[in-house]
Image (cartoon, rainbow, N blue to C red; front, side):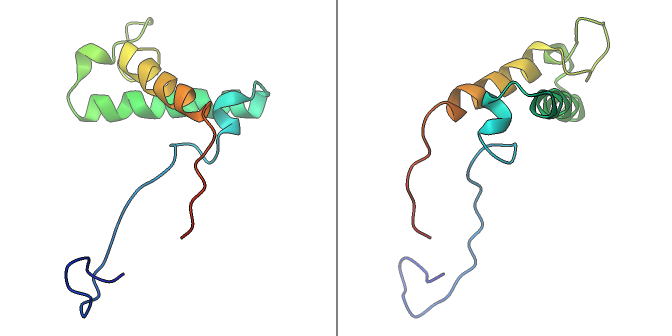
Length: 93
């Protein structure tokens, strides 16, 4: 990609877009494979909070840390679910 301020230079560009799961259907569909993927994703988010030392937000209903039932992980998946409900913008790369 060309440097925005100096068009004679080519620079590296790294970015992230989209949701954490492969596509919106994983958040919006109720089919068992999608539900299993959402549950595993929520557990993954909880483990990431544990690794970050955010234990208070990760304690689940079972009393264990990182099991995916804590508030932070549940809210993380909920935000992505609400975001997936909006149509994706049209982009040209």
